[in-house]
Length: 103
Image (tube, rainbow, N blue to C red; front, side):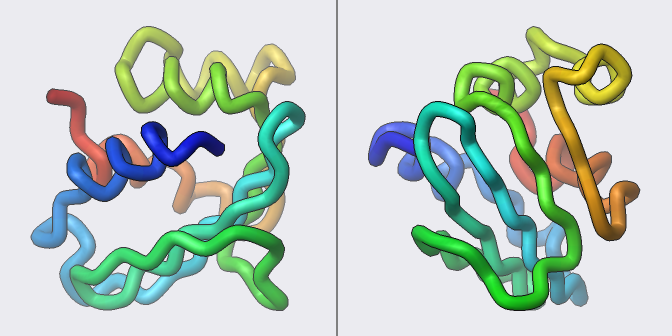
């Protein structure tokens, strides 16, 4: 995941939407390695690597993530067509768009 993508995620993070939430989103990027987001009651931390016990794990290309975050790609469609694979608490993936609303 490029620094620009990480910066954009941090800028778009909606702390109010994350109020009371304590979850770990693990991302496995086919083209950019592993990263995880720790959402802790309105705070966001972004880390490189793999978390020991993520709430949900998502596998995709960084391009798919950009499309989902921008609204150009419907997350459910990406999941149904195999562009996005999820394990763990899959319903958490549906909250990404509210945690990182479009500009």
